[in-house]
Length: 108
Image (tube, rainbow, N blue to C red; front, side, top):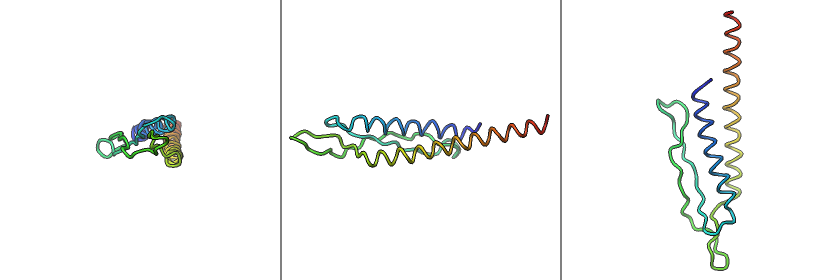
């Protein structure tokens, strides 16, 4: 199994968790959404979480109360994109496992 793909899956899970938290708090007054910054892993192998940043932009004012600054459309597009990246890494792991299985069968 590829450590590169596993590190990507772990990092993508954090991205999804942050997005889910943003969406869950869309109706929380004064909530500030967050975003995840990713970077290459050690030796430019894999992916890891570099930082989680809070968005300091103001939310909409409703009856003199600041609402959440979460943008649902942005969050949903991001979750779809992250889901595709997750699937691609799962497919790469599956192919790697199948190739290793074929190699073992050829050697036996």
